[in-house]
Length: 260
Image 1 (spheres, one colour):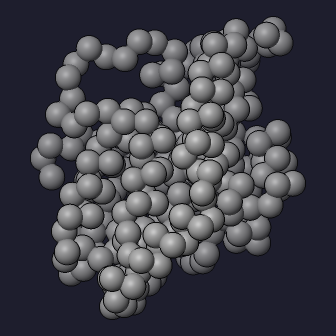
Image 2 (cartoon, helix red, strand yellow):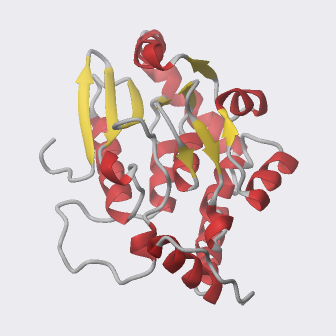
C-alpha cells in the first residue's frame, strides 16, 4: 500500500503479510512504524477475506528493536500520512484483532523487536535467528515489552534475559517458550505460509471469539500494566545513563556510566 513508509502489506488468498520494511536500519520500531502497523491492523480487521496475518521483517532481520535515534532527539516536524502510535496502542490492537498473527522471524529479534514478536500469537523462526532483551547494554530497561514476555516466559528466565542482555539462539528460544517452531532458513517462508493457510481454513468466528476469550481472561490487568510501564519508561529515558548509553551507541564508543 502506497501510504505506508515503513511497512509493506500484501495478500495471498486469506493470508495478509505485513513486512517491516527498513532492512537498511534493521527494521527499527518507532512511533511511525507503530502507527502504520495499527492502521494496517485496523484495515485487516475490517476485511472479512483476511483471516490470518503474517508479520515479518525485510532482509535477514525481524527487528533489532526501538529506533534509538528517535529517543535522543525531538520527533521530526514532518507530518506522516498515518498518525504515529505507541506500543500501548500497537500491542492492544494486536490482541484485539480477532485474527491470528504469526511472526515469521528470519533473523535477529531484539529488544522492542522481541516484544513485537512475542505479541504475535504464534512464532515460526529461522534456525539462524537470535533473540534477546538487549536494552540494558545502552542503559535502558525493556519496560513496555515486560507485559508481553512475562506472559510467555517464566519470571526467572525473563529476569535473566533482562538483567544480562544476553542473546539466545533459536534452539534456546524454542526451549523456553519464546517461539513455537524453528526451521531452516530456506523453508521459513514456506513453513509459515503452510501454517497460516492451515489456520485460515478454520472458522474465523470461532477464532475471533477464542482469541478474545484467551486474551481477556489471561490479561485482565494488561492495559493498566502497559500504562504503568509507559510512565516508567519515561522515567528510565530521563536518566543520565540512558542519555549516555544512547549517545555512545550512536557514536560507536563505549559508554561511561554515571549511575544516575
